[in-house]
Length: 308
Image (cartoon, rainbow, N blue to C red):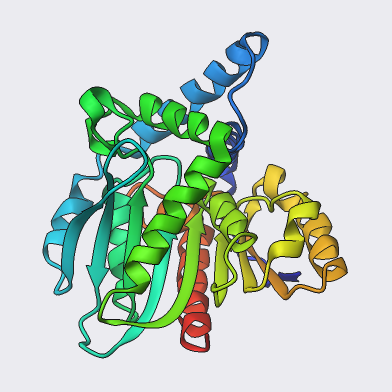
């Protein structure tokens, strides 16, 4: 596990940023676990409240929709049949017309929002076809997807419920992988990139698919050690410094992956917080370590994708 040289950060903001990071990371843990029993509901609801407060403090992300509208790349919402309802995904094509690898991106537990669309566009700009499944397809009000939910709290709770049926979620991801790999511009190579809650789902997908060339995990924990035997892809980890739930798991993940004979490398970005790729792009971010971690991580991702 690699830790880069530490980056200074302004001390007056440390407590506020730590609280935000802990709330967001705890929210990922809640959403990545099966629904809690009624006895655990108050603690779960308190975490949801903290996440909502953190999201509101970040402010509107309408500027991301404007940024996406200025992109030169082709974007489309595509639909395929699912089990009981249609499945939707956001698809982005690169500027090049060459045949290129496919990247499946699994976003945070905020789902297919403006940030997820912009992140997909940013990866496509590196030269890849990118597909982002809306894992809430058909599960919202009146059978809608992520955009039909009334608020961020309901979106996160819906993602929490998804993980109570890992088989169904994996089937949905497999459906999208099988569909997108057949696109005319895809050359057969296939990678998955996951962020926060989506990072855990991406690691899980790596235990299921033998055709994955690489998995890129941003700040979430690994599946149970017994599941890691199914991994055939190279797994690259991108982790935050201020993220206790995740960072304390890394030594165990490294040991388990080595014991299973799997390729795994992990980089911890000093001073950064959980979800630093998003936070480092927020106008209200006051932690320079998030900005530097974002830049370093995206450069590393581009280099590793190119060498895939």
